[in-house]
Image (spheres, helix red, strand yellow):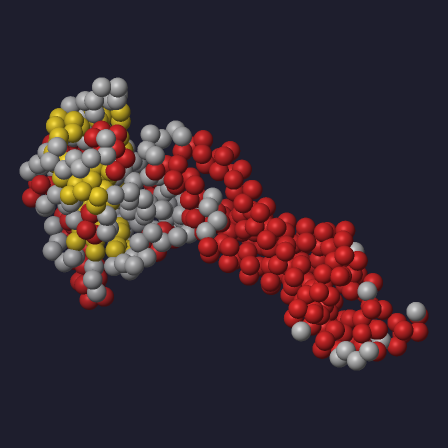
Length: 453
């Protein structure tokens, strides 16, 4: 029966080929446009550590001034600052409640490969604590992270990315070897194996940047008076002219993350934060009411608006365009089916039931929807390729990190989920466009068409 309906649909296509092409083209345009916007949205909306995102929490404290116009998030004034001051980060890190915790900030360091033909270059650097690697499930190609004792001394040890290892050591196992960081030798203790969380949830100041190439123990912050490459936001009128003044000022520039294994542990840690702020209030700090938050990864991505309203609006506009295409297709299908109504009348006179007529017409429109979906996949692929070549690839080439080009590819890649989405959209669009015309033809009496022949 299905093969018979497919053959009938094929003969219908041949009877009016230009109308068939027009209908399939309308569906393909709507599906292709929707797939492009959905792919871009899908690339931004992922959770890169979904298997433990409900155990990882970004710590925020509200140390803003009382005047709401003087500071704060303009879009969400209820949110506390997304970073912490030096003194707060140090105090919170001392808590033994979390399973693991890490202080961190972004910096940049000069790397001297000390190899003929390989020039000195500047590498993105993450200055952090020993728990960073285990907490965020960072995969290692060689070696491992450093022990906690290396943070305090600090010890001249370093973890490097695979890209840095390839560039400086030619890709061999470099654990135990020395790498020159800003004029000082550091012993390599680990090489990270292509870690590339997207978005980069642990530091969303560069949400879709590659992960850093160099990881240094946190103690080097004061030993070297390391400058931060990320934003520094001062919440008071303090004049900051030196590194020591920065450490004492009400300036936020550090991130603190904690891994909490249970709701009970989270409640204890929340109480610890609130008690800490109450103590600081007695010392004249934190003038606002308690507003200390622990945001898990999903909440953190939402708070930072990683997806963005523009992406959501583009998806809504694309789906609206698809709906318009479906409505136009509905009109075209109605005209097509009414034009072929005498054939349907003849089939009814020869014994076909009303259900047979409706089924055959639905098969025809679903088949056109499926072809439109395949064509829409092709249009989406072409559109994403243009975006990749004209927009994402030029930006990626400005980075020395080869991961930047991988990220550019991932932003415009049609994965299996998007292919399934195209198939679902084509079937839904076909059903939506053909259900009423098929029902309308099935309701018509065949006698009127037979008398006219």
